[in-house]
Image 1 (tube, rainbow, N blue to C red):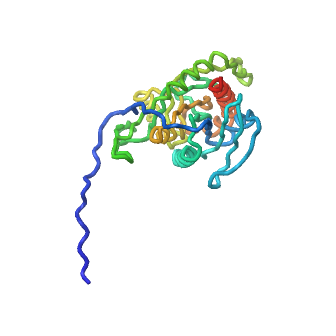
Image 2 (tube, rainbow, N blue to C red):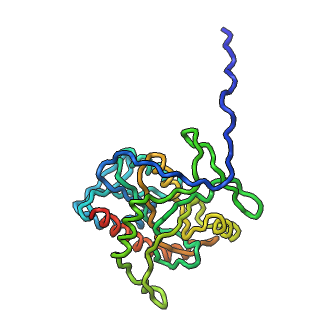
Image 3 (cartoon, rainbow, N blue to C red):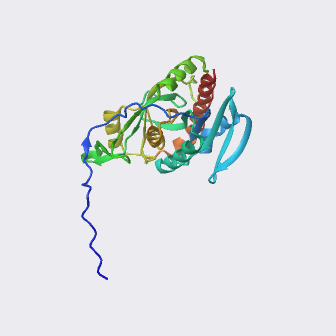
Length: 281
């Protein structure tokens, strides 16, 4: 029996809109009463888990998590794994299941702003994806808004939730960081608002560093929170990123990362606990 040929394609190729589009604010869906805290690796979440009272452990489709309360607020803590794909997977799964009232991403990030010190904590007024676009001459990126899953144009920049930023400002006034006694001279790290960017490269070249600074003006660079922010935006879940500065952004960060990330992870985790406590007030 002769089969009819398949029809012509109805949809044209997607349009590309050059620029650095920023996500518009969207109303949150009606949540359940739980705060979800994610980190990429166990080093970044263990002190948040330590702060849980009535801690219980379970698995969601094989992915482990801990739940309990921080200052009376129901809290779920989980690890995503490193990189934007792992982070997107776990975020979508946990947001879909728990429908949290907010999601806080905690952890470490490299210091692309030279003014940020090891252990300084940046609370993201915005979170960006710096590796989405066309890479051109001298590793300069042409960013654009590309077609998203709803036929929309996916943003590059995602603002932090206003309510969570207001709570973070209150928490900053009360929070006392641990001294950076391993540095000479010692100092007390700062917690402040700033800009965070994400991409799936652990180390990057000097050309890319200069271009990212020029176009996006970030304080810290890491590998997960841009995709977490994007998932939260589509699923209408309030999001905020809290990151501690570890190594400087560089081409080969391995040794510096292993030496400096534990202190950065501690400071980000401890402030995250303070922030959840502030949300419980």
